[in-house]
Image (tube, rainbow, N blue to C red; front, side, top):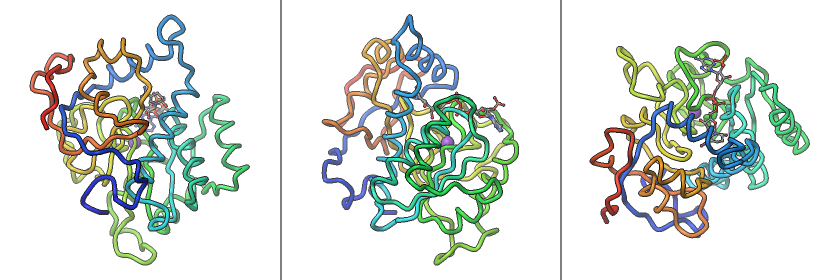
Length: 285
Ligand SMILES: NC(=O)C1=CN([C@@H]2O[C@H](COP(=O)(O)OP(=O)(O)OC[C@H]3O[C@@H](n4cnc5c(N)ncnc54)[C@H](OP(=O)(O)O)[C@@H]3O)[C@@H](O)[C@H]2O)[C@H](O)CC1
Ligand SMILES: [K+]
């Protein structure tokens, strides 16, 4: 992909780049924010609402970095939890925006929302690959959305996902159509297979695949401190009370206009991000 995160042939409404401070959150903070957002005593959001907004941001991340006129074939790899739902929503938007979309969704969530999202995609004639069809999808894809595991992942990966992660890691195993290496990968929240928090002892970068782009939802997860690729932020639905409680001001202040996604590549960790409370200094130009 191009060196800049959000390519110029994407929507002209793309934001003017800003540079600011990053606030990372760990898995337990991410789960706590999720719970507060959806608690009837808290913010009162419903899961499908948040999933729609998260999925819209994921689809925009793909579109802005890998637009369909250059990357027409999109593979969405969807996992068994809520992140899989984000991927299904993104698949629906991407289909409408002009991608040929294939979905690999080998372990469907049981809740009604997952059944509905799958039905919507089938109604739109989106292809669902068989459980053992991931490699075929990967070999013919121009770009992949990795929405397999999010902040509730705990390693090591189990079947059937383990083999898919290995295919993305070890690209020499596969024969890609029309090119030598694997297609670019956009990971949601945390690259699937990576620890959400610090990398476990003994895990090296060679053990996991490295995506080209990560779209973090709400705030980047601690495990991303070692990610050097293109970093985007989405999930623009936090009430001010949560922003303040978790010290996320410097993140949410960076959105421009009505953008659902912002480019946080090159942002630096907040200097006082030690105790789980964010930094309140002004972002540096
Ligand atoms: N607030 C927000 O920003 C929102 C983010 N959203 C997205 O939701 C995910 C988190 O969703 P959650 O359902 O909590 O969890 P995951 O999607 O990460 O995955 C849970 C499932 O994964 C299985 N799992 C876990 N570890 C493994 C493993 N090693 N091997 C195989 N399978 C694994 C787990 O199975 P269990 O049997 O262990 O229970 C679950 O089935 C967040 O990252 C965002 O993407 C929301 O959409 C909206 C709000
Ligand atoms: K992921």
